[in-house]
Amino acid sequence: MGKDRLAAFSDGVIAVIITIMVLELKVPATPDWSALKSLVPGFFSYGLSFIYVAIYWNNHHHLLHTVKHVDGAILWANTHLLFWLSLIPLTTAWMQQFPYTSAPAAIYGLILLMAAIAYFILQNLIICSQGKGSLLKQALGRDLKGKISPLLYITGIGFAFISPLLSYLIYSGVALLWLVPDRRIERTINQSASREI
Image 1: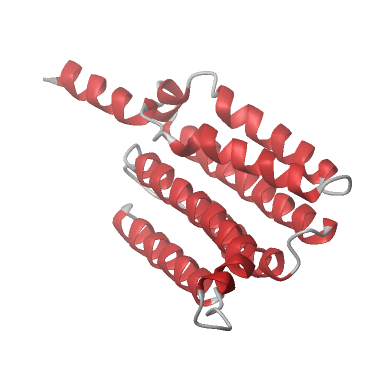
Image 2: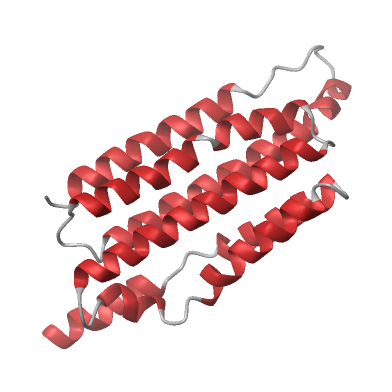
């Protein structure tokens, strides 16, 4: 199977995830500026989750540029990733409702950790399917950001039981780490194409 159906399905699921998250934002209770103060925690959690989903969408898009053929293992690994991403709206809504409590902060971090693991599995299955000289393996190199992120999520989960705000800062830090688009794949594809010419 080609990658186009996989990309289209993934894009559709990610679009639904973002739509569900925005529907969880509540309209202010009164028509004055002070009503916006109560929305700050909810808007923060929405913004952070939106950024995370956008980062996954962006990097997933680049990841699929290295794929020529999709097998069953890659399909299931991609579905596994989408499963964890689809839980982000639930945990985001929980954080909006209880912004200063441990359980929502810890579960949010757990969902981010599981999505990172699922993405790692997808990457490795693509690398295995490409065999020796894998374009994706060349692009990722040592993948320092990919190795540090799960450790930071685990740290954030631990801190959720001490200070949920500190765990949110850690999750925000990981998002900032990935906010700049990962150009490794794009650069490797361009170099490979120029060598073929």
